[in-house]
Image 1 (tube, rainbow, N blue to C red):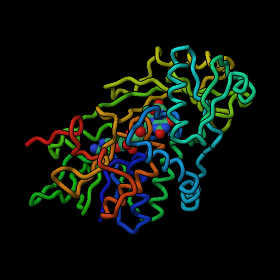
Image 2: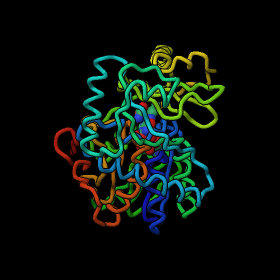
Image 3: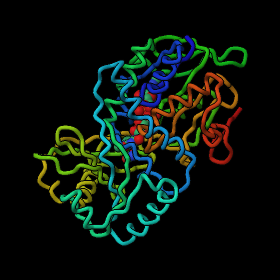
Image 4: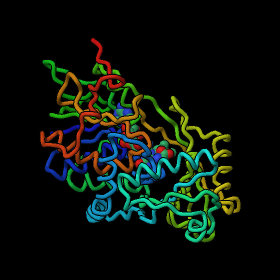
Length: 373
Ligand code: FAD
Ligand code: GLY
């Protein structure tokens, strides 16, 4: 095969989709089933404007990814007939305290400078008119950010890749690499050895364990996120509401509201703590009091892959040029999925990538990496 991708989350699946479209022969190995980890836990916000409030090397990629989503979804539908719940009813970023309000106005000024057509300041009265269930005294930043069902999207990428010829080997765990003459030629898995020209490690928060096998210490850590969902009798919100204190409420199909999320660093445990759900519901009902009368649906947790410098790794291993590390998308892996697939495919094909990818190099200085011998 041309490319072996380790990890069947949204990042591995999106890369598989893009590469198979370009004619590559691709195998994805996944230790469980596709889209079972962070990619199915995500709230699905394509929050380019809501997640970034200061300069960041990801912003050009995030904006482009957001812009291509409608076309990507149409393409995925054509290949899979999976209807991915998606809407562009936008987002209200709001403050619940004076301190948050001050930060929010800086956030708004930042985007007003960069993309004034995509953000708007709303007074508290305007917020009340647009979203009558939202309690708000400071006004809000409205952004055009879209949102999707993250699990459906992840599965659609995987199925579309399969439709284009990719093979997915589920319940197959990679545990080491086969190195011959200073080149990685294959991967040892629980279902035998597999050989490929190129290998992509896209194992989300678990990537450092495999990278270590190639003597690469990635400066990464897991960040657990817990969520709760409720059902409403009638729709309570049109737009996503995202408070500056980190609590968001995302309206989904069939009158579901997803309320997220905690951020517990250094935890791989997917248990859901009562105190987290208590805090989420307290914050959510402060913003939308009617949530107190909704029907509880479920809780869940996922593990976000974070890097120490907050910038993902997208690039070749410093010693083995045919091995790519693609991870560390932290809070924005759903948003960045579409563009990551394209950029990695360009890199593999030796094409010029239309973005500056140097900040994402696994060989970057500082918190980037350490190669030990
Ligand atoms: P994962 O989805 O974790 O996939 C990695 C895969 O690799 C897993 O399936 C795993 O089983 C597999 N794997 C690991 N080790 C091996 C091995 N040795 N062999 C084989 N397979 C292996 N992002 C957004 O853009 N918008 C949001 O609104 C959003 N909300 C979020 C809310 C929560 C609560 C959480 C937890 C995350 C959220 N995110 C959001 C972030 C997003 O979910 C992640 O950035 C993204 O899913 C990362 O995708 P991934 O494919 O890298 O990782
Ligand atoms: N982007 C939302 C989260 O990671 O919780």
